[in-house]
Length: 468
Ligand code: NAD
Image 1 (cartoon, rainbow, N blue to C red):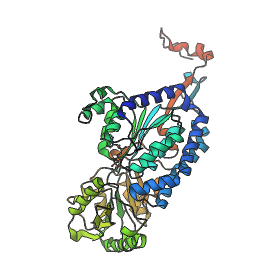
Image 2 (image 1 turned 90 degrees about the horizontal axis):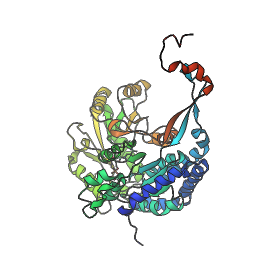
Image 3 (image 1 turned 60 degrees about the vertical axis):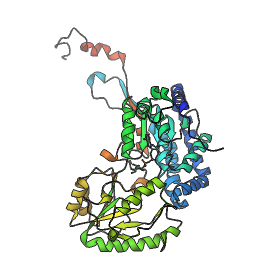
Image 4 (image 1 turned 120 degrees about the vertical axis):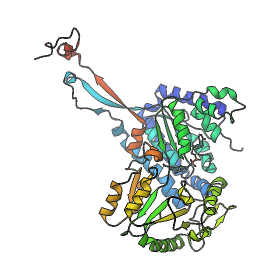
């Protein structure tokens, strides 16, 4: 039977049922949470082959990349949460500071927030969906999981297989594109998308209240999500993007880098040479034939990237530039030199295998270029001297930072991962994920024996009453 998206009509009942289950206490039980985490781990372990096949079909991701970047981190995170759940959920005793409460008990309960909506993006469709799910399960919540429909094979696998592992009373996968997601987000969005809802006008009254929305994707949709959340004052975590720079200082060794490179002028030739060598070393003389080189996810993204390449002066395309729409292939491409103020590649996040290089006189100029833009999600510095990278850290801002490498900081689950400003709000991974989906409920138990002493607080007020 052909795979179908979740019917819009069923969405309000899905959310209502999850709320009923949450209120019943089902997901608050520690044994239940641990079992679900074990099940999620088993989902990854038993279906590695199927997940890798789906990721290959969606993005031509090599099995090695699937294991390292998508599946193993989830297994690792499940194990971490199972091991630490007793400690994480323990109430925190506080040291009292107000004399009148000296005899009382004060502590902070770690409580589940309630019903959570988690929306994933297509470029790491397993990791970006399931990593926050681990934290949300551990914290005792019910969850609506919304995989990205763009990576369609992975989406299908999530929708059909996950319910066989995770208790469907507490966790539901809703699959769909804009209309379904709009319906999940609630009536406000339905009202905005009148064009989509012409046949189901009564859906203006959808009321899906979530207790937290966790969204990964682009900033435009991030704004839609935040607007929908504001309707119910729902807290959000937004894992967004932006143009993440890589600084290559005068004293740097070489790199393979993210959205754009700010390179000391006297290093540019050396860097280009290193890129040329590395592309051949990694993918052979024709990357199109390499099983280790991915493809663009769909024609929409391909056409956007092709448009960017078409806007480049051909003389600036110093490495790669070959494209093939039928096979959604774009060669690893370096464009240099690029003007940070006027070049087409600097007008939007590239999010594809095209890397512009901006030669700079010095790192002060590089920092000015970065600081004139939105704060990036990641910032990379390639430098040998501690002074050089500390200087850049002290005078810039970004969600996270990594010195002398790329991407590895997100694999390190002991570090909270998230953006700042337009690259996102909130963070997760490891213990931070547990905190993100947990409400810290301040609790005090009064010792009534102290009542005679503290009764000075009652009227009629008398300044002498409290004096000793
Ligand atoms: P996407 O198209 O998969 O969309 C993400 C989610 O938003 C999907 O679940 C999708 O169904 C939903 N969505 C799309 N349009 C919507 C709409 N109009 N209303 C409601 N929901 C809608 O992913 P994308 O946004 O193309 O992802 C790429 C972006 O995500 C880039 O900007 C990238 O930098 C960013 N990103 C950030 C992280 C991070 O961890 N911070 C990770 C990956 C990608």
